Image (cartoon, rainbow, N blue to C red; front, side, top):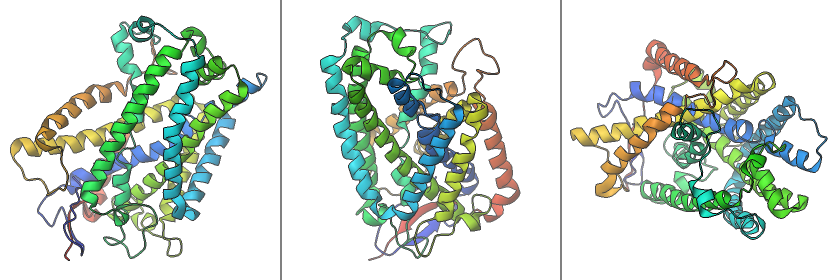
Length: 438
């Protein structure tokens, strides 16, 4: 458990070994999973989910030019463009990242109403029974309930990212390196032990409410479901926008709001993934740690970790040219890795609470309902983690199989072998307490 507690002003760092907590052997495989999740998030936002296969941009092109013939390598080039842009921004434009995040947050909030209001006014309206009580089994599974559980894989991905600020806070100059912190993180946050979790909770509340409003709006404004699913654009929401507005210009603007927010997500996800790799390398938790842990003395950012993250994204995007099955499996792998890291972290807290083991002091907690909330979280994560490895449709063939379970097992085995052979001799373990003296 890598828990940090800031008490006073001068930093004194205590590792797991200093406190007699032999957690480093457990945290190294967890760190591999977290790093895989955030590396996949960069790919997920820029590659697999939308921009990687060029589906959204292709959809706009097809909408405006039905004769356009899309090739897979077009999507790969789009991935490279987005990845390079994000890398350049994180390297040379890191100083203005907080400004970009504020602008993106404003567009995110206002963009919701820019989308739903035209849908409320112009889109065909379904009855409450049609919108809320009609269920469709599109995967060919025996029951609609099973199909719904497998279909949760896509929306569960939207739950990732709330913890990104925590990984950014690991990049703290006063604790580990004598450099300045460009990106907004713990140095720029007073009372970080209290402010950070509160900001995460407020983000969950706000985005949960906005997501619920958008989901209900789409349920009532879809129109003909069969026609929407078979849209030539490749993305049903583009067709919904066009059916509602009957305007190419309006549809392009609404989709552009979505794309701009995704571009901002790519920048932030790359920032988190690179800092996570840098932090893990700093603790000697990955191969070639000395190389990845270097911070540029002139730009004051982990350039090597950023370049490595972008290079992995570009290489993985090449898979799309030959096989969409393998690329889709990586999507599931990233979700499964993230769910596992959450499951283990929450599970450790639950275990320590149940057996009465001490937890590090904290500035913020869930109060007396914390244990119940943690247990409920585990109950939610258990079935979701199981279905993350299921194939999306049946009958299952090699081309439709979800091969994420094979890659997941390979990563777990590799991380355990790596730690047993080399990592346990070099890995310094997580920080348990950070104490500051006035």
